[in-house]
Length: 222
Image (cartoon, rainbow, N blue to C red; front, side, top):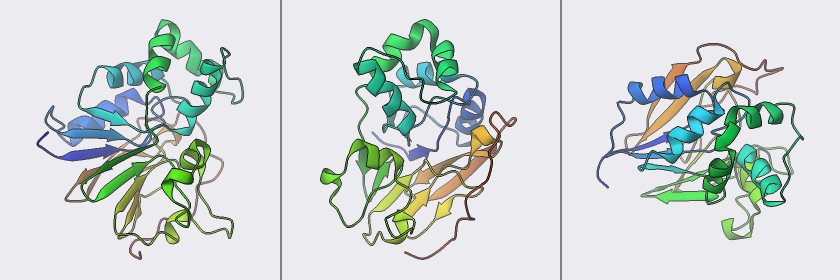
């Protein structure tokens, strides 16, 4: 596939903002679109987002922690009630629940491209990716010593991730974090590769109140 690679941050059911972002980046069918996961849950239109994803042939997506939770319950023949917003997610999905879960069931934990990799949350750089669990790859923010995982990451391959909502993207020489909290009234952000151009669109409103934002992202560093 020719064209650009466009990695999209956590959408969380914010379908209108997703469309705003696709227009802002001028996405075309020749672009390789990649989602960092958490397409669904918390926001107003998980069905709209997942149906767009399922019918977009040039989209790839890694598994997010919200997809992982719903998938584990779906595989067990139950429905999750661990989070307050789970019931709303099921209501939004409606009769698209089964095809949505079958699509989610096939999502990988990592995606690779020329000089980059995409993971939903993070990983322990001291361990090989093949030894890390789905829970780690979709939930990890900090290592046991309290440091953000990407501060210990030393490889040159660019690691692009989401999951950790901050007011601004994390921008480092070898890591970029794209969760800018759209569902919390922040923004939806995409990274265009190989140029490493960041483009954001503002949330149309605050869908979920966030108690506290994480510390500001620091530019530079490894």
